Length: 188
Image 1 (cartoon, rainbow, N blue to C red):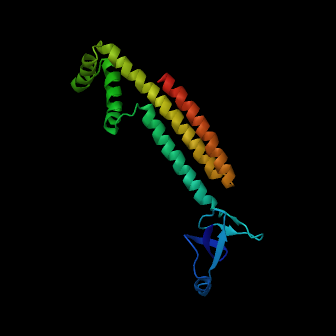
Image 2 (image 1 turned 60 degrees about the vertical axis):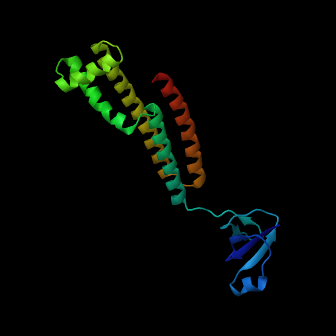
Image 3 (image 1 turned 135 degrees about the vertical axis):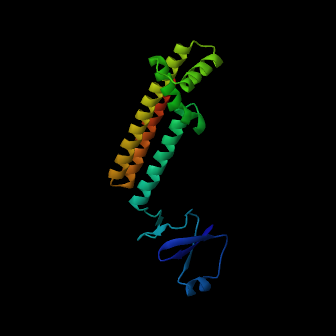
């Protein structure tokens, strides 16, 4: 058996065993003994049953947007090959160095970036610079697609009128994100 304290038609808490019902009554509480499993916050219905409380739509939307934000961050980590923040911060500088190197206008520092990276990989300087630019272009495109999915999902969640609609949007965007990530990782 399960023991629950009821206040104002809501389950306040669970108990591990019987209590003094007279003591509960002095606090305006009642005891429910049942074999059903409930959680605090469940609300008593007219028929005597209890249902989960209805969460405010704004709360449901906020949590959904946080889920989308976390999924987006994880997607970006996976697209980067789980690169560290420090490494990722160097990528725009390397891409600029590669661009300038191929144009023939690279500074000495930019030349060292390209030549050092090419030497470590036993590559021709021009080929390494082209590889950097190709990877940068691909990564930027994938980031743009991931950002687009996040923004579309956020907008749909904000426009949703019910918690069920929010759940359906999250489910659909999860499926779209998983399929897109699989495709992106196979092309990256």
